[in-house]
Image (tube, rainbow, N blue to C red; front, side, top):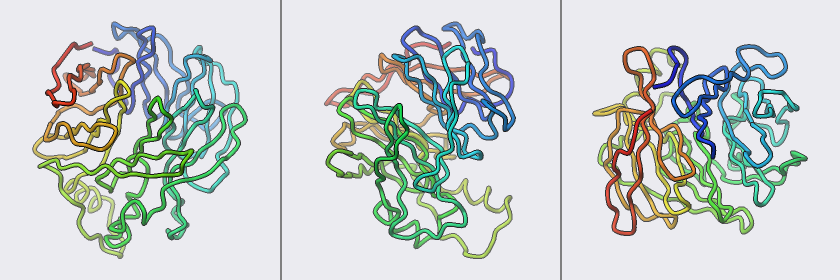
Length: 317
């Protein structure tokens, strides 16, 4: 049980000492292993170290640095784990709205993904995952064209939902990506510039409808969005499994599928009430759900091998 009565738990990172780092929309919150609030980093605002819309979080435990991505400011903030702002920079290249971040410290890179600016015409040259050098922030290259991801985005006019919803990396340096309107996990091998797509088969998946090219009211968009499934998050577990979280809406808010890292489906049709928000170094998965005005964060141990045994609940906090 966390001491958190307002806001949201959009992402959670458990470090090697057992601290829980929670990404809200406006701040980073650090909790101890018992759920007691230890520190708040940031807060609402557009000044140094403040956030207008915090959408991405990454923890470099070896260097003690915290990376935070602000979508509205198009900026990355770099903090110490004590909350001191080290530096902040605008993501100017290659021209997109940054939203997600994942580190590959072993090879000295980080990866970012997000959405294209609304004024940008989506073309075959529109790319969605971007590689930078750690330390210098030098832009290296980009991957994953829109039509390479799914031509249905263009055919169904899904550009309003065209954004990278999550990124993760494996020990071999591969990058895994989900895009909200596309029912796939993309596995990118940056050194070879090879991209593979893992396709699921969840029985409760609902494909997106054709969207009108005329403007819809916000309430109409919200209602329509709940009629189809979005790809919410991919998590690489123990360097062996890729867990895909789907926002299914009905009959439960979320669904899960488990793949091996070659794209084979090991387990599907899992339904959950809580949202997959993170993982720890032991490979446990963390889910968040609001109960009686407080967030309950439950950790589950993924007991899957080549024979695809089901997940089992391990503990709650």
